[in-house]
Length: 338
Image (cartoon, rainbow, N blue to C red):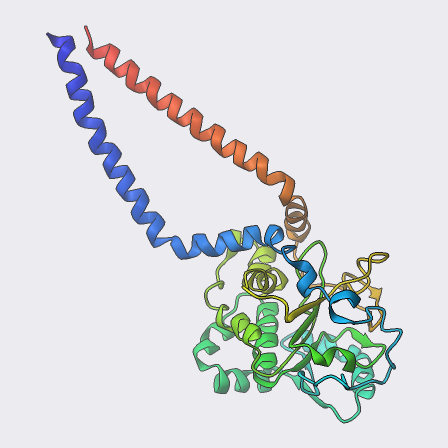
C-alpha cells in the first residue's frame, strides 16, 4: 500500500516545481531578449560577414575599380565621370588627453589637406564636438559624455559627424599618399580589417547615409559593459566589431563598399599596425588596446572552429544535468518505496 502511494506524491510535487522553473525561465528570456539578440549578432558577425562578399568587396570585376590605384592620378579629387556621392570634407578627431599626443601628427594631417585642395577640413576638439553632439544629437549627448572609455567618444563621434556632414573621416596617424577622389562615387567605403569586418580609422560616406544613420541609431542599444573587460566593451559598443556587425546584418550590402585587396595581396588595404597601402601610410598603432585585447582577438580569430566544441560542451553539460536529476528522482522514489 505504502509503495503504491509514493509515485502519486512524487508526481504531484515535481510538475509544479518544473512549471515554476519553466515560467521563470521563459519570463527571464523574454525580459533579456534584446541583450540576448545583441549578443548573438556580435558573436555571429565573423560567420555572417563573408556572406555575399562579392557584392560589397570592391573589385575590378563587379565595380570596374582598380584596387591598386595605379590607373588613377595621385591628385584626382573627383570621381568624374561618375557622380561624387561623398562630399569634399575631411574630418579629424582630437579629444581629451590624446589631443596633446595628436599634435605630433599635425604634419601627417596636413598631408591629407594638401593633397585635397579646395576641400573643407574640420578638426573636432572637446569643445567643438560637445557643442555639435548637444545640438544635433541631444538624445545621445548624456550617453556620449559619460562613456567609460575616451575612445568610445571618439568612435561614436566618427559616426555622428559622418552622418551629419558626410565626407571622409581619418585617424590622425594616417598619412595620405594620394587623393581619394576615385572612391567618391560610392555611398560608403571603409578598409577591410583583419581577421574580419572593417576598420573605422578611415571611412567615407555620403551625407545622411542610411547605413551611417544606423551606426548612430544603434549606439545606445549596444552601450553595455560587455564581459566587463575594456577591449570587448569598446569593440562591441562603438568600435570596429560593432560597426561591422551593423554592416553584416543589412539586407542589402552592395552599396556599402569594403576596400580589401587583390587575389595576389588580400591585405593590400588593411590598416593593421604600421603599414603602407596604395593610399595611406599608417604611422601609428592601436595604443588604446588594453591587456585583454590579444586574448579577445585570438578567441575571435578561432571562433569558427571553437564554436562546435562550445556547442558539444553545452549539449554534454545539459545531458549530465538531466541524467543526474533523473538519478536523484529515482533514488528518492526508492527511499520511500518500502
